[in-house]
Image (cartoon, rainbow, N blue to C red; front, side, top):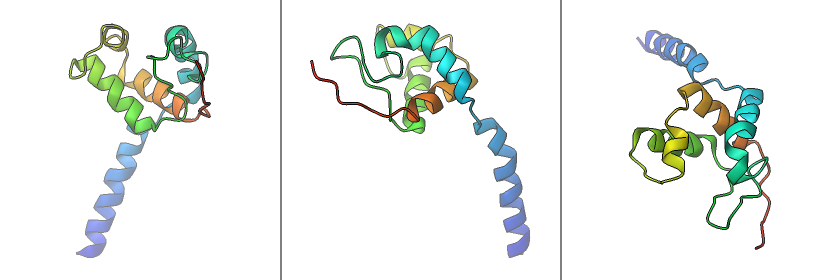
Length: 108
């Protein structure tokens, strides 16, 4: 019974893995097109002190935040309309890209 449960668990994990995959280069490209104007080229130099530094954040946190903006669970007059057109794949790609950037300390 334990072997059967283990095999089923592995099968589910392997089936879910492609859905969680993200493309770093696609995230980098989308970030340059959409996010860089406010968050900086690599997410380290935001336009204003109120704009979050995205570089170095956990990918899960970034994806969850973008999904919340997209669905309206989290409201922000700038971020909500930016997140709404993003696909789930674009959200995963952006989250991966920013999570791999090294955060810098910004002084204003």
